[in-house]
Length: 102
Length: 276
Image 1 (cartoon, rainbow over the protein chains, first blue to last red):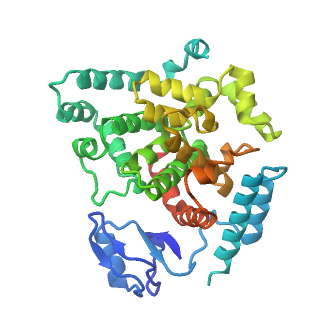
Image 2 (cartoon, helix red, strand yellow):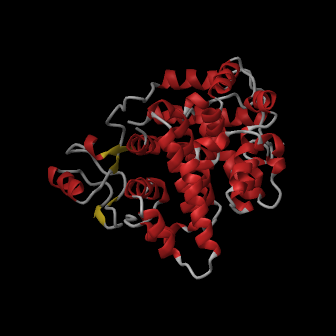
Image 3 (cartoon, each protein chain N blue to C red):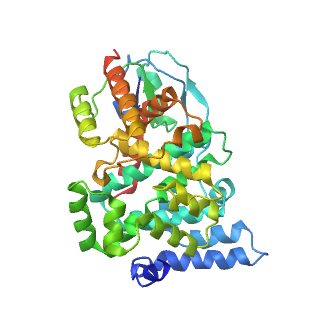
């Protein structure tokens, strides 16, 4: 799943969760393939973000798995605290799962 | 410590906000005034009002409806949160795009604090988002008031030294103490001061241990995930009680990382709309 600003949303992308407007009204259910009409309506009703299935867009600051793991190792360089090392392990698992997603 | 902080001339950077906060205090003390009076006072400044409403509509408060007036914000958020947002706004105005990563850290810690507070069934989870925004206020004041020293501190962090130790060498106090001192001087209740004081050292928490633990862990997780990298300094140890204190298991922590990852785009978009 990926949360994207409305400007990145294209017809054919599938919603991962309900889309709601600024007043909490549900505009579109989950698992729906978005059309031009949906997107036009989102603009009119002030929707800013939509969560869609998969990972359709590479945002400018997003790293590759290798880069993420490299940066993670650098952050935790020399750390011996067992709790911190557990947190590092959770992050490694998280990144590996994230990049396995279709 | 207090005496040393008092000698600082940081207040010269904050004249506008101090005056406004003082006026709000007067209104609160006068029992006859309601929130309408406070709202009117803030609305006297249209540019401040616009910026304030942007902050009150920050994506992570998660209100079902858009907040369109200062009065509604006061109703939903309460006077203390509104006061903090005015302070945060003041610091945003003193910041520039160069400070993006510092703010990314602050908003990130706010978002994660709120997630943790919701998970632990705290009713006022929006308070925790706000605490996140303001938790490093001591660091921002150091940067604004002592730019030269702050650059030296940054250099030393790159050498791998602990921020707290370097601050104590330079100033004889650290940013948690300075932040708590400032919050206290602005008449915030202990519930909002103590977590700031204890966000790198839980032993300093007395009455609000869980609240402090939430901020402490949020700060740590945001660092671990690599959000707001510029402000990073090495965390060498962590309170081993932290997970049991908040009854969190590792799969719940992973879920928090997943949410942080999902919402990074929202943090960045929000910051691009408030930082110039």
